[in-house]
Length: 134
Image (cartoon, rainbow, N blue to C red; front, side, top):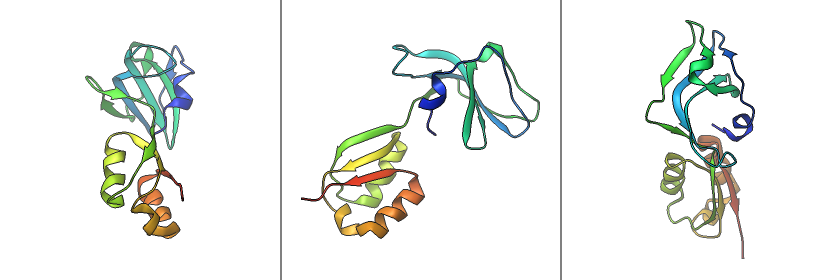
C-alpha cells in the first residue's frame, strides 16, 4: 500500500462505505509530519486510500471490514537506492516483507534474470526495480 498520497489530507469525520477496509487505532509514520501520529484510522476503498483521520472521529458502517492496528505502524513504501541482488527471488521477498517497494539494483544476479524476470518479479510483488548496467 502506498500511503504517502493520502497521509497529507486529513479529515475530521469520515464515513466508511460497505466495501471499505478500515485499519483502526494504528500509528502513522509520516516523514513530513516530523513525529508519529498515534490512534489514527486509514480507510481504503478498492485500491485507494480515501480517508486518514483520528480514530475517535471516524464513523464506520457495520459492513466495513476492520483491522485492529493497535500497537502497529503504517509507513509509506520504502526505496532501497543501492542494492546488489545475490538471490533475486529471496531478496525481493525479503524487501517486500520489510516495506521496501522500490529497488535500484546496482548490479548482481538480477542482471541475469533479464527483462522477463524483472517484469515477473514486479507483477508478483508490485515492486519497481531499476537495474544499472556497467
